[in-house]
Length: 309
Image (tube, rainbow, N blue to C red; front, side, top):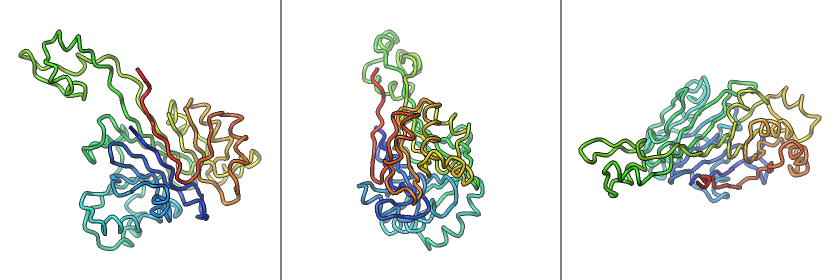
């Protein structure tokens, strides 16, 4: 089970009912935090989620409204006795940009590791063994006013276990569970591979978080077939498309057009300008292009589940 919680939905300025940008993805009790704007800790408490089992903070870029919550979070983790490493990733310039931010956290009793994600994506089990096998985070380039990226979380799903094949190969049923988890076993004098007793891979899960970005081809490609997309939607009105692009953002309609092109299941709009008093007032502009659009709000969450079969 994968849970996504939208912690903050405001752009640039925190508002009474909107914290700055952050979202949390959790699976098997471990988490990835996407961005960490000012006030992320208190917003997470209001949302009823804990940030203490976060293994990786994935920063989309280094503007203050996306990173100024980091020093306080790092300090809190230290006060609460964290001993395991905290990994942080981001676009180019990670070490130079974060050095002054990390200094603000003072002396801490655990390691902070700044890492680049490999092009093929990072298997999250490499950070903590409690992540489900097949859970991976991949970065993709976006177009903002500074170097920026979005993130794609995927969770693979193995094919259906075929007991008749396991029986034919002489595998006792006490070992079936290992094969279902992707491990090879020894049976009947030979090594039996999971591929010998599993059907074709089934559809997994996919979640995309854009960060700040214009509408661009790399974003549409990364979102293809996503179960959930949380997208920059800084401006609400259709006539603000050029304004949005000039500032490295999207309006509601542009975000919806990306979701429609990519065939996502559900779109959550976020990162609202302070000019938007009631996001729902502009929701029709998105729904005209992509019906399954929701105005994101602080604290909303969704559970992503595998399809049956």
